[in-house]
Image (cartoon, rainbow over all chains, first blue to last red; front, side, top):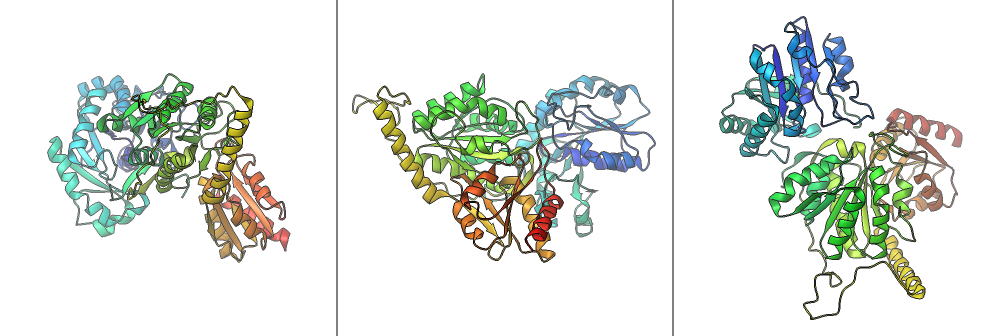
Length: 221
Length: 353
């Protein structure tokens, strides 16, 4: 697919935004010169893009992250280089927005300029196995909450339904209808279904627009 | 919710509490357990429950005291420094023989410490934590599934034995996401004839109190409470044993440490070392029996902890120091690796040859 200059990932807490952001930045770095990943998460001090530093550095992706991410200083700090996202239009940017409306608040600082430039996509990441977003209605509710808090309109949905380490091809297949229902309820197009890369072979041809990912490392198995 | 869902450990605790009939939650934000409060804030208003962010941890634990006195299931949660603040209130709950559930998602200490995982509140939890002679029931989950199971268990035990129960988790178990099933059968809570629900002029007043003007009576109440603790020790101590039957090296650890230790035990077995694991699920009461039994054939114990060595004292007490106990640890928010535990096992195996 054609990617805009800025791709934002937002959605419910724990829906899988960071994994998608990291893999997308890596993918973009293969075809574009200046790719950056911006971590706007002000809510969760854990499971950050910084966990994939080695991978991203190897891919030549510039990391725009708060210097306090992954430290013991638990404050809602934004990265000091954050404005590069809107000031430097030669950058291709992936923005990892914090979870829920409370995480999307930080986006308000940039949303006006992103909307003015109008070269962006913002994808709503959904996982039907998260207990507070099990159906299209709850997803639609989260969508409005995030748009209101972040000041930016979504342009598509990524179905990231998974059960962590218990995820099988069956898990993904059982979420296909959910993905469609979310698209229908929100009026947003279903852009992709993201999966752990090892499931690609089994699902190829069965689910359209698959986005295979190498997942971030877990701290403990 | 019989289908599996993907949850953070903290969210699983909150949902399990709701399933157990808890409709009152009081808390004050602190990392790494804030998801519990956030989840309660979203869910409680939809099911007619109360979520209240108190002005402090001390306020929250005293709100817990109030609701518990009125006979309702109630919970609060915090992380290490916040639990210290709740200490006074927990002592009052114990002194009034009130059930309540307290969650501690431990972080590195002492003092403000850090926000990464720790197990260094073991002494505080298992010895009571506040002032006076008392215990609380302490349960140690090592997976997201167990976060849910043991939260429900905590409500049941607290009601049965009329004492506070703590779910002693840590930053990692609280934050990690795993599939969890909520296929639980929830028992009806026992009748609470002691609850302060109004006499309707039909019975004498019920009083929730921990102040005794007569020292003889206070002594008697303390002695009676400790008789009840003996029953808890006898009936409720629980551990999981893994490959302990012929083990020469017995590794032990609770919560997240046990998961790491289990991987190391598997690796040691693959190398021909007779290693096993005892994972205490209740920390108070401490499961003495499997340790006593293992001490009959084990040549060495290794306690794996995210602390400077706290549970190791209970291991020594349980085994009456008959077998040497090594310590394998990391602190400050760091987590031991399976390789570090394996190294300890190999070293011990060399020494006992």
